[in-house]
Image (cartoon, rainbow, N blue to C red; front, top):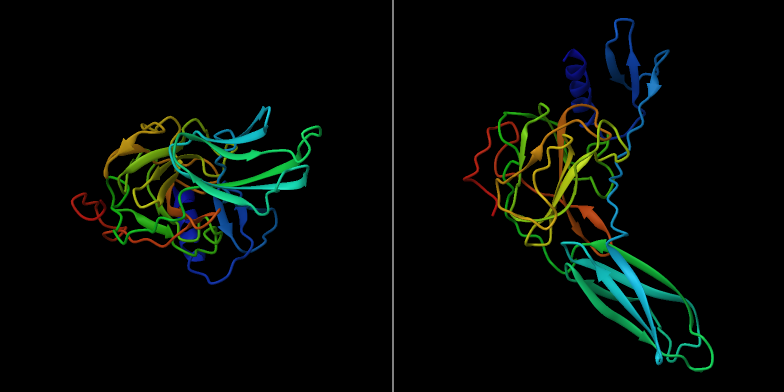
Length: 298
């Protein structure tokens, strides 16, 4: 407990700084672990990786269907969320008319469309091209509403240990407006807004392979997405495609992934145009108050 208090105190301090610096992890002769910006003898550099691993390449696929008239390119979206796609054809040869610029579209959830049909200039020769597909979760045409978010947990009161633009780890586009709230492992985590569960991870132990640890991503009706990170292994109680209402139990808080102590990392993101980034948001009440599910949200 003493180690955790030291760590949370240190994180609260550095999150208020206006610059970033190297963090060192130091264990003294009594086994007490401290985190500091001083390079003491025997200290190790603490490497924080805030890059969330969320693989969707198996869910967004380009398929080529060859036929007598040429080739048809099909796009599949197996996710429970819309996906913005951009397809460019490089090194084109023998394509009638050619494809002059990248072609963009927003694929609905769980859909397949005929995206392009290509015909050869010379039917005796093969079509030549190299497809380059870019994609991002969400529909960039939707605009966030101004509704506030309910506190996404039960119990407390708890303490904010790193806020928006925190220089310890909240400085990347995907996490710039994230909040870290210290809470005991096993705290119930609930939906801050109604929506559809898009992605989950539930089986990571400790630091694992994903810096986010176990997580739940919920797509809201206005196109924003609430993401709940560092959850307890095996605690996620919702499934992909499930509709949840505000206050629905999602999981329990944990200390998985690249987490420096038990806490919930909560962030709201949206597709800004082939890129998912965090956006500012407000809770309907102070973080250090007891949740009131009759206030705020949808």
